[in-house]
Length: 397
Image 1: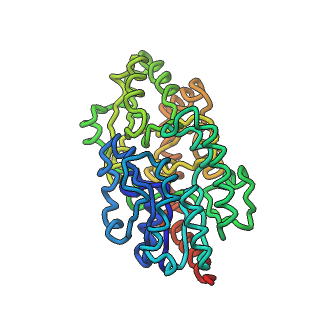
Image 2: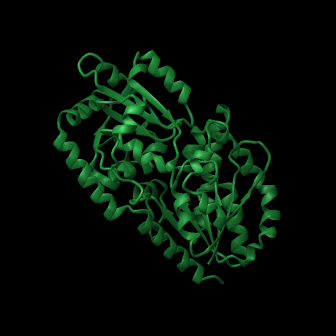
Image 3: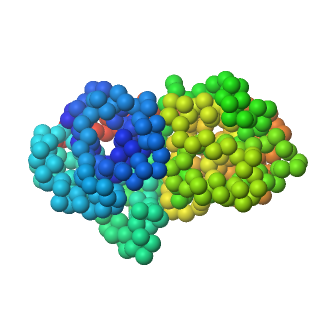
């Protein structure tokens, strides 16, 4: 198949996400072209070359076209796509593609979907987040314009849903929150690379990080606006005298790194929190292996409640017990295979329960890996997406 992908995600300048896995799988047997924003905004916050480590091969197998080469925010690039996409589509001979995958795009995705439909090529709309809610909370949009942005985002979202032949969606909760007919949707959840993510020996890395003999509570991921580390900082401070060997490891820096470092200082726990910064994707399992308990400490809002974080499955594949904010997507996916905390006291109680009970940690880790291997391996998930794409491509008029 010749597959055209429209994406709000820049594969070369963003942390590992589901599109990396989709493209990695599809490009092995199909011709893939990706149209996307040029995310210079993220590239200015961290060493994005670390994001690419382990995925260099896919960039040789796919063609990537950007909406704009101008140094403007992704939001403005989406708007600019109204003017630029026509020329780009003609240059890549859009009529020769078999199917279009719209990956979480709003304006650009709809424009391409409409153009493809005019020549008998159908679209699959992949929805992995509450896109209108993300527009409202985006730091790339001036605060005074976010409500209007969310309103316009909802309009664009509905148009994309209407024009798509199929909708692939990460959770039933997300589908239901938008009222998308189940007859039009196919569940394509997030997953994990089971070969890469394992529980590795961690003694040497813990020594380098200054975590020898420590009981490590950890988080891996971007430090974006949906994250809330303050409750765990409060808990770590409360352990200061009672359990001095409990420390925290934070891996990632995109977003509010400096703000969270300042917050840790304000709580007086800088000596107990290790900020490792951005690490190459292939090294992430090693850092998770240093952790005794892994966290998903998200704010409870529309963005997080409709999310299904990849880190959930990566933690579990590394045989680590997980404590998460009570999120609809997480509860739907893994039910009681993780522990849930709604506030600082609840979080402290769950961490202490795991701290004192090595058998519980081991059992949760072993059963967690077994569960995600059976249900959430990227290989199985990508094969399912490929089947959907093939089905839609066969009906090309």
